[in-house]
Image 1 (cartoon, each protein chain N blue to C red):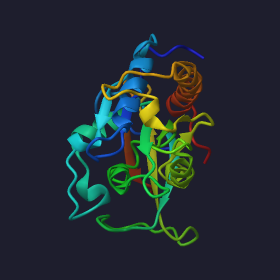
Image 2: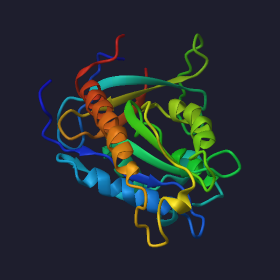
Image 3: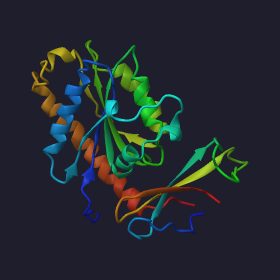
Image 4: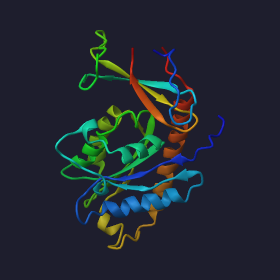
Length: 191
Length: 60
């Protein structure tokens, strides 16, 4: 495969608007881990900073600036808390505003929960949505269970094991992102 | 449909048609071309190998 001159773009979506959200610490941590890699650009996309009209949905609420970021992304890291065994409705509302921007791109989900399970139920709930959006989910997740013991109030990481877990997750995500970019760029759909 | 190449509006490269998405909604699509065997419209997705731009169109 010929290396592409464009750096990989892997934004991190912070998928909750709730005040006091601990997911913000997890999302910033993931951004920091990705920033350590050569040849990858990243940024935090906080859904509280996006226009979130609720008088329409889908294309009707598409924000051109964030849609352009999705279009240029090669992979998405989606950080989701678990609320009542699922992911936040506003996260889906935002994701539903795009479609072609996601197709044949990699996705990795980071689950966050106050309890011990690290958002696994939210992630399981999320997978059919990811598939329908045309994203390709990797088989590594990062699960921040008991999140108040993983980060302090300032967002400092207290459990260093998450460094290695994030590394493994990013390794797989980068592989998938490169593979899918090659496919999008070079492999035509059979007809 | 695959023979009609899209040209990237941003950099002028020939784009790669890499996906077809079946969509059941015809809202906002003029002269919607529903494929009766599939029950909906096919939206083609094209990617620019030069700059990464994405474009889509309803298949003929």
